[in-house]
Image: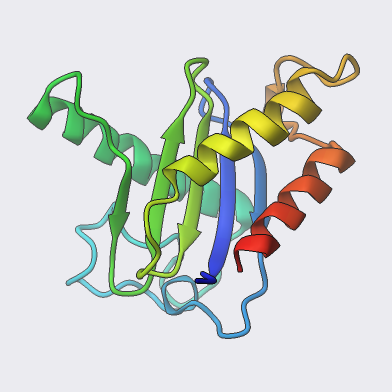
Length: 166
């Protein structure tokens, strides 16, 4: 069953967004175009938009990371160290989360009815990130100062992989 993927983010261990990609949807995702309602957020868990005006991509990434960071910490405090934050859903979107052993964080926003994308995020890490970014001798190990990943093979592979889901 095809699903609608709205966006994808990768954060490094220094909390910098090293990669982000938005897919143009045939229908605009309501969560990403309207201000959040109080019933779907408590101030930090809503979709990445400001009131009235559209925020920048950097602001979106910071809001996404802040949401993930807060929910992950809350899940660990309430459930213990063995419990992991995997996803959360609102009426407009579902956020999927995957953290690698090297503290890379993969985040994907999809339609709310999507099944768990944890395996998909793991496959992106194993088959695309490791193959095209980590094993590339010309790619920097650290992406300091907000320098993102600029790897054509990774971008093409990711786009093809995600479009195969849609």
